[in-house]
Image (cartoon, rainbow, N blue to C red; front, side):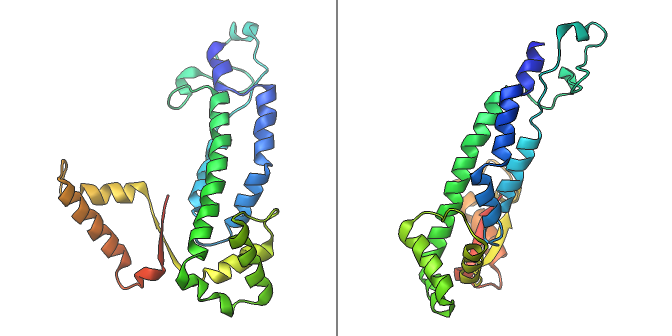
Length: 212
């Protein structure tokens, strides 16, 4: 019973989970995901972690007499993946992660739009698009709500950039090429070789690496 309570969300926590799915921050991130430069894998990972949080407040101790498995959610401690972390704590962590993700995505957009190479493209935009972007750069805050027009304007401004997705596994594999342990100089050369390989034949000034 104690492990079940720990691994499952109660009634109040389930309402919090449902509210998180409809949260304005999620709506904003889904809208920004339409910009090709965004690290959308982070949003997918967030959704996966939220989906894995199960809710069940129906189990009563007498039901365990017949079978040591929850008849409502099929909870069996041995079948739970990984450590049995308190589901309520995971929910709070996800809420904090949403704040960080939104702040990071906003900062990514600001930094790229402030790039002189990108700003040189502003004169090619329509007046309405340019005004939306300049308003964002001036306020340093995303508009509320993030409209399709805003997303399209950002996408147009950043269209000259090329997104290259790398995973932590890609980086790990590159740094381990040649064996471990390694000297700082070995690691530096391996990482430079990894970057050079990914940048080969491309305009490095227009490349943006996204680590997922």
